[in-house]
Image (cartoon, rainbow, N blue to C red; front, side, top):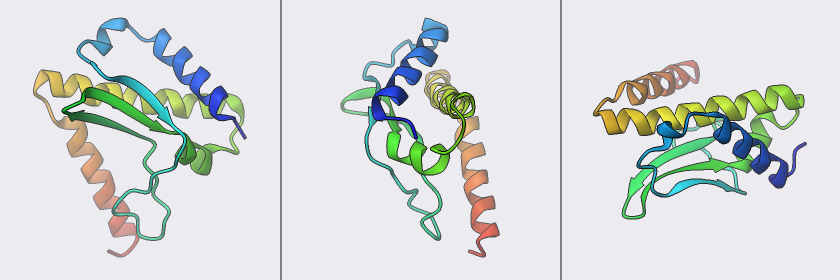
Length: 123
């Protein structure tokens, strides 16, 4: 298992490796929170939110849920855990850039995946 600090260091390293331009207008930055977060449509407490892109009075920012990563990927080898962090960061940064571009393709994709999950669960 990976500590909160290790996870934060990995996210920092990943973020630093991406082009700075991708973060334009991300006024609230990125934060790693200690808790896990279940998706509101989770059927059997088996669908966790790993990261979220937010736009509100605090600005535009990305949250990552350490507890969710540990529950879902905590037993993976370091390189695979790191890759899941990288994918999640890239996913949330894409939400940000699509919002800036007036595009909603990734939200449509996410909604389809939730629909597929609900079908698999018989809902």
